Length: 126
Length: 383
Image (cartoon, rainbow over all chains, first blue to last red; front, top):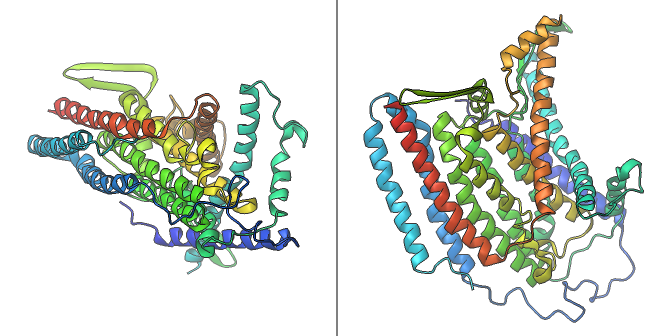
């Protein structure tokens, strides 16, 4: 296992941030500003009428629910990764059966959670 | 001291090279996409600027640059301008972690009285022990850029598009993350290079005293994990917001999704990010399921021997070997990118509830079943 090369990652992140910022400033400098600076031009997009909707208006709570469910399931899936990577080692050291059974219990809970979620109509979109 | 400077500068140049490789692949892909879609739809596509319309993208870039840059009055300006820049970052740092060829070792040499090297140049930005976790984790940061763009634009369409896109990206991340658990279990490593090494040689699978072996089938992951491949690759379409899952920009209902208010160069940067995610998905699919940079039927050592047999020096043979494997990687990579484009112009768009149902109720259970089946097979085979 090699350590995480933070230097390389940081270098790339900083470089891309600078590169992208430079591109935006370059485009701004070359593009220039037109004379027409009316408020109609600077309005947000709407199909040919004055802007009606505001972004503060209501949005479906479904997205929030999806995000919460995602966090639950994502943590469960991430929990499987260390098990998956060492499963063969466990089998080689003779601990395969208990590890498999304990993961079976975990996956049963996972499946029950998913089943319950489907049953309680948390995943229905109308 | 001299050695450190040498290594740091070589690595810096390499990282920049990988980033610019990613950026310059975008015009080619856009050209391919427009040209390919034109042929699929029985049109000509861009064919006026330069040979085969190849210079069209250069002309487009100039046009993008000369566009007036402005933000809507209602926009949150900081977020609005930061989002396109941040769209580049996750794609680039995840892509840099994918190995593209065998390492090439610089021999030691004298320059200005100092000995430099020997140094092993890896054909990837940086090798990370937990490569898969890093790539998946970083690539999913793209959800933040989408939300930044959606909120920053101050427009209803952008916000709705961003919410849809981020909900879709996180939903399919579950199926994607779970589909590769089987692969991790099989190879017992997170390291992509080790995974590629494990996929060399001919196909051989033995269980309960029986052996299935093939002379001509390479030992690729797809023959062990076909279900995982289908799940992974379909989830990759949703992750990179491509058709048939590009609900984020369903024109009929959302104008253009989270980049409704963007134009000119900022739009181009979102494009680079999106194509970057496509490239990550193609690179990962190649690495997990198609032997990465490996050449079927010839292992990396054998290839080195063959090139040595042609009368090259050790260094020359290493360089040529790296080049050949780089070519092999890029051929597989290009095939996957073409599949992305072909699918986009073949399938219609899903409806949003169908998309969510497919992710949560179909792909997640299948990925789970694949994991359980793999675990059971590994357990009973090695008992």
